[in-house]
Image 1 (cartoon, rainbow, N blue to C red):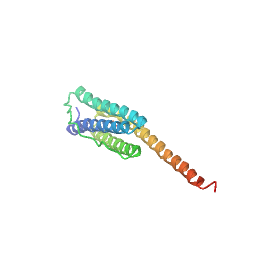
Image 2 (tube, rainbow, N blue to C red):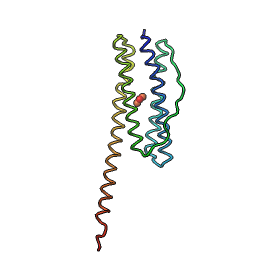
Image 3 (cartoon, protein in one colour):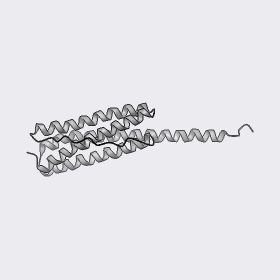
Length: 163
Ligand code: FEO
């Protein structure tokens, strides 16, 4: 039987994953409205994934005979400067989620709760993949920024070339 503290943390994680799904959805909406269709596609997919994670926590709590609390929907940040800001915010949130998973994991381990640790292992692996994906996108954005500077620099160098 899971401890009260672990149950509380698992319920908090339902809210964390749900909030994150909403945040990704708002990012998708901003991206599509501003013409960044690739980012919108990425974010719509992530919004669904995070909703799936929320459901996994709900299902797990029900399977172990505990109360699953369905949280209120929080209004996410809806406006961004550019896609770099979006992915930087996404990375921060993924890191927050990773830290919250680790917190539940260490509580469950302390109380020798093998069912919860086994359930959480999937999320530990998932977070490694998700953080890595967002970091790779940030690398792409930063490299694209450098290419733009390089192209601008070439243009600048070409000023007055025929004089
Ligand atoms: Fe479910 Fe990537 O946090």
